[in-house]
Length: 155
Image (spheres, rainbow, N blue to C red):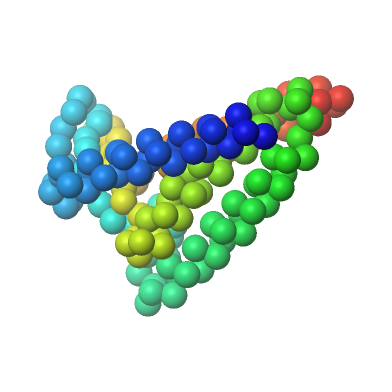
């Protein structure tokens, strides 16, 4: 269990450190080109993925805090029940847990999530995201991979 939680802690630390540098080193909503199709752009997301509910009256902060706390507890319980051979699933859950807690910290202390990674192609801009969001996305892909390809004895 400790090695899986250490992945989550690493994600949380990387997430919070990069958000600190983005928040202190970038000007809000000003794109800083890094390479073609990749900018650093400081944005604050009061909603969830793709700014879902960001225009709500403020209640969404506590709604997303409650969801994050509940999901984190469930992920920890799930991690504790895994067999040693279920390492792909354990890594997936650890990444999702670390990402959820990373964004939860922002919501609790700031009332919004700091996003700063902006990808684009020609005129299409993907919604800005952060390290926590990336960890959640990679974890979700690994969850799907595990569901599709894990041996029945490993499930």
